Image (cartoon, rainbow, N blue to C red; front, side, top):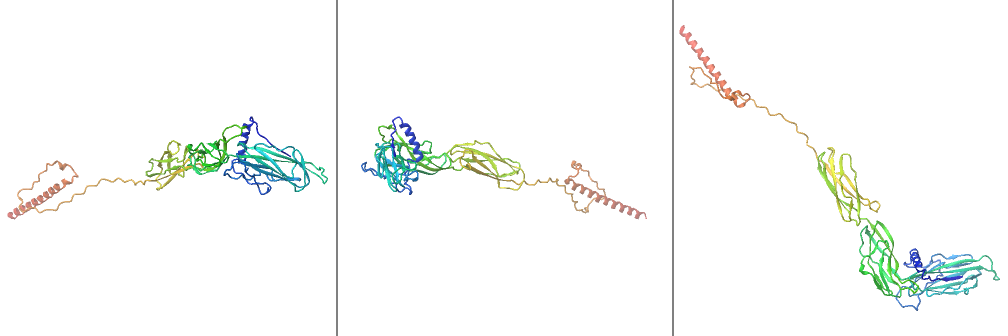
Length: 493
């Protein structure tokens, strides 16, 4: 079996740092370690070196097995991938156990490496360095591997082993079986709590959110900044950083959440800190992972309605509706008539479709009724849609239009002018007794020019009176003449 550990050269430090950051993203270096699965009861919990600084810090967690127990026909492994977490200034130990299933010759090919950060110790039925040992069924060999980080870089090692079946005499039989255990040392520097932003309108910024950081090391730790790296999380109060945390100290750093799109979102952002490093590593700040989650919600557009009132057929009436952008980002409006019919002529006028956050725009709408149908309140609606909206369906608002057609009075028929009323003849009068009958009555002709005008009601009365007088005088004259003749006749006889 071969146990090896390595320390990068100064030239390889930069590449190793990049690889460590990538590996941290893949394995979640900043998240709490998981307990070993129930299928690996042999995995012992790690312990903190009692010789280190006495600080009130969480105990080192049980190393997590990233793969299930490995089985073959000769032996079993409690795990083939072991992670050991330890804070800077502390030491933690993880274990891996080999259990023989039958008589085997078990060995390694080299001495385990011992460094200031790594240490190894074997217990049980284990081979000597650069040698092999005979294991019977049920025998166990346990590796206790210690990790005492001096920098924030992840480090790795591997335990390579080989076993060969043997008969009762100890002679090898069959082909050898090889196996490997990958071991990762995970340094703990800055522990962070996840940020839960809740629901925040798209394009706006939340209020200060709770974000707690803890210095897990045995040294003073300068915390420098929040590195968003494309995430919607920002430092809410610039005066809160930088600051230095004592060993084991925690602090609340206010952050904010500014979603650029709608929907549930989660990811990582980074906290920049400057931990101590050994002499072989570059002395520069490092970034540590923090997690966030939140939901971007899109505030709906707002639109007013329009009532055209009572409009006569053929008359064009204009109204305006107002569309408001309550979101925190620009919108691009389009307008579309909906639910209209052929009996109304609705037209949308020109308007500026680009609205800044919080702005509104007035949209002109013209209605021209086409016929004298019955009055109707609902004429249709206008659907305003933000073409830049990221939600599904896109952000929109509806403006409802109403109005009625004014009734038209029927035309009045023309009438003829009134006809004149016929004159009424006055009652006949008796001639006066003292009329001088010795002279025939003479009717004086009138010189009034109004007699030439016929049809005038005011001329009829004098004409009638004149005619009546003439008749009476003529009768009296005839009566007198007849009386004279009788008198002459009587005298002659």
